[in-house]
Length: 227
Ligand SMILES: [Zn+2]
Image (cartoon, rainbow, N blue to C red):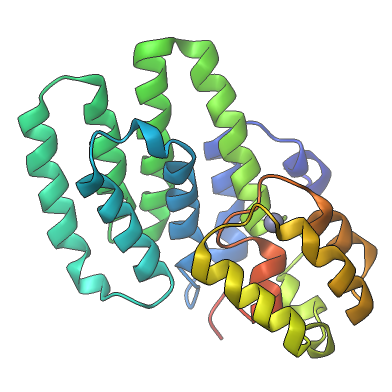
């Protein structure tokens, strides 16, 4: 799939496959893939049947950021497995499976399976059209987190002078609060720091920023691959 087509793609699994050559050869960072799974879940946060499921998703997010031990992923998977079986064949069961898949030991499968369970949840109750709309939104999350696998790692294009003390402080604040609704307010500050237009036009978007945003990650030095 050529770069321009990737930017307009609407099939989640096809887009994910395109990432393979760019990032899936070790040593690669699993961070962004797991954050895709988390962002897909956070988008449907209100549909989780209880806080225990949400806590499991938050745990996966902490693993992505190196703040929790990946060895415990299996514990949370089992917890969700047990809860899902107790729920039985109920639409909420898909949400439990989504939380379980966020903790899949393979970050690749976490991204793929979590997104699938969430679409199945919508398909089951609200039909194919609603599930299709969600798939397009999930594709937007891939763009938000990876930009394009054909353009290389944004970190290579971001000179350190862009991450001024003021920029770093703001970025860290977004990461800490997990609230990106005012991300577009960074535009002026980044303009002063000398950021280029493609970066500014991404920051300018009022919606759609999530943990793992390619601009935020590049400013903080989170690479797509581990060197
Ligand atoms: Zn963003």
